[in-house]
Amino acid sequence: MAKNRFLIWGVNIKIFVLLSIFVLSGMLPVALYAKDITCSAGFNYYYWESTKREKGQQFYTPISIEATLKDFTFRVLAGYMYNYYDVQGRDSHDTDDILDTKVNLSYYAEDILGIDVLLGLDFNIPTGRANLSDEDIGALMDPDLVPITTWGEGFDVNPTITFVKSWEKIVVGVSGGFLWRDEYDYSKEFEDYDPGDIWRVTAEFRYYPTDSWLLRLYSAYTWYEEDEVDGDDFYEPGDLLEFGAGIVYEKAPWRFSMAFSSYFRDKDRMETAAGNIRNEDHNSYGDEFLLRNSLRYSISEKQSVFGLLNFMRIEPNGYSHEDKFYRGRRQKAEAGLGWQWKFARDYRFQLISSLYLLHDEETADHPDSNRTYRGASIRIGLTTHF
Picture 1: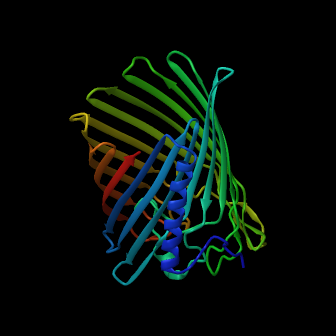
Picture 2: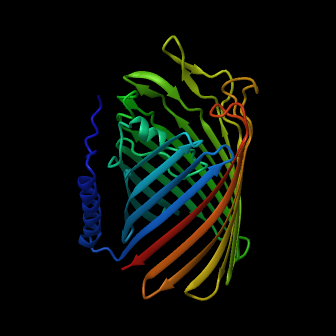
Picture 3: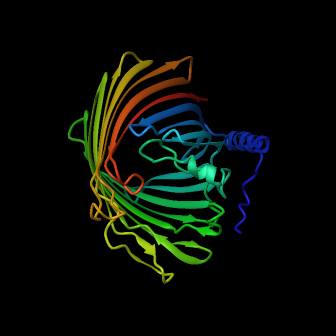
């Protein structure tokens, strides 16, 4: 059984560990004579229900500290989550715990032979829950219904490097990264789970035709290595190709942005009865398209209001309608309003409320009927600088 060296059970001990992490992370940048320190905390609540009497809710309270010293940046993010999931009024699951802690280190080097370089090193510290029970797993929900879909993972390391070249009105950037993921016990049925490592490259082009306008194009490619259980190949996600474009208009007191993204995933490789893995017969993921819009109006130097309008569409996958692996079309629309207020000397308060409607055709989870989900969320954040 894989032992999670960083995982400590017991609510009181976990809270102590969480607080200790933030005390230490707050002391470190001070000891390094950081000139800019940012602390933020939030409260996020999400609720949804379906036409088939399902309902769920998620509370999430993130806390983060970020410090900058010259060209170095240090950031720590941790949080607590509560999930509740009621399956058609017959069976319910609820669990709460702290989540994994994220640590980010970055260094920005300007104008090295005419190119700017950003080095990043991210860590996932497994302070969250692993070796999940059936109750823990049952409380997890779809990522299009709530934003957080995992309790805890193993120790991860993610180095990245980005190169940026700027001209008068054009900026071009390319980056690459590698995510090394350590072994951990996912559940009692999946002990010694070794998730495959992930490689990713991205490229972005930006054009500034005027001081107020920005045009943006980007692409990314991600490929995955095999997941293993007890040392045997178990599953390998298909490679992911992304394309996107966006525009930004900003002229006081207005700011408008629109971004379109598309995602195309290759076939997964899955375990067979013979014990090896091979490509699935058809692609189990349909092509995905996402449109995000935001509009902000600055009432004054200290207050602004903004609106969000997002659309998502996932096409049916490659399996026939009669196949048990068939996933029908999924469509989602979301609208939100927000308010931001800067007060005192270095404090910022933000409130965002949104509603969404999601329609899901037949899937393996509900093969006999369509479903419509209605959801709402409220997000509150407080940030200070010193």
